[in-house]
Image (cartoon, rainbow, N blue to C red; front, side, top):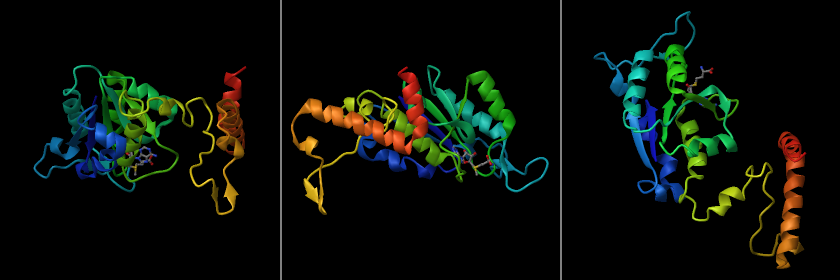
Length: 236
Ligand code: SAM
């Protein structure tokens, strides 16, 4: 699985992606190619941005430069990868989008914006002709698309076969069944005058499972009424 990042700040990578299980799988189950968008500038000053038409603050990334970088990235694939523009204008990222993205064995290309973002024409062109997706990681604005891309890569690659040592743990976590996960405890059985729920020490797997489902539903209902409503609808 090849993951290509198009960025003006290649030194940000691999960063967090080289740690833990994802890091162990890097070079074995997935490969990372980091491309500097500036390498596709065509003038001697290696210009990648210009002032916005209509005025206003900031700079806009140039369409010709971004287009050349995208074309170069795509030429590294034999199949059609997921091409993803990280932007606050995108669909809000979630569990099910992560799963969809990971199902494309051709891989992924991430376009990371900076400044005021990217000229709309190159975005429209790649959405129309190459099915480029637009993904946001939430309703706030960051300086660049690199951290959002890392979020999407990490969440998606958890679904790739072999990345998690215990494949079941992906399906046993928050959002997998539409609910938040039940609370977790470890030793000691008593800490700071607080005891672990008795049922978890009982060794009775059926009771433990019933308790976990109950707590999972209770927590979801209390902190995420939106998830709870969708979950309930899915069961009727
Ligand atoms: N002018 C844009 C706007 O108001 O919608 C914001 C541009 S932002 C400062 C620069 C880049 O950061 C964007 O092009 C995008 O790649 C990335 N970015 C910022 N916030 C993001 C978010 N919530 N999700 C995904 N990408 C984001």
